[in-house]
Image (tube, rainbow, N blue to C red; front, side, top):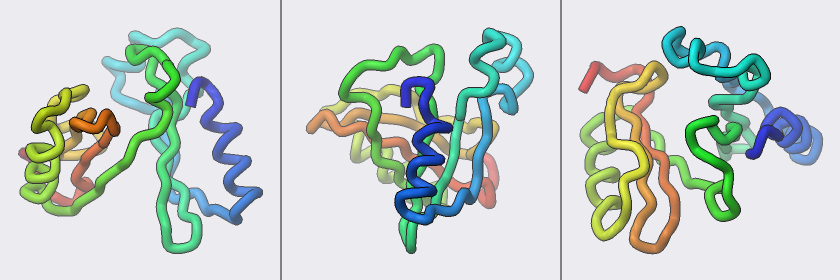
Length: 134
């Protein structure tokens, strides 16, 4: 979302009785990253998970380092609790595609990456924090 994630979250809560499972702002991230942000960027949503029925959707604002453009506002998340499965998805999806973010450890996941596959579909792939490091 282009600085409208909070608005979208509220909308989906009202429209579908969605429940917020997790929400973190950019300002709640790693101190090194937060220090690079402007004051008006601290409240932007870095990551949120809403549960609608049995389905989970993730909503975030576009990070300041990735400019918003039509076509990149929707991506498919693949979540696993097994790093080997995350690596398998990542490896296959990047074939004939483009790596947007290399698969690496982040503050919210032991293995997170983003690719645009050969069909120009954006996938964000990550392992839940329950796993050990890469």
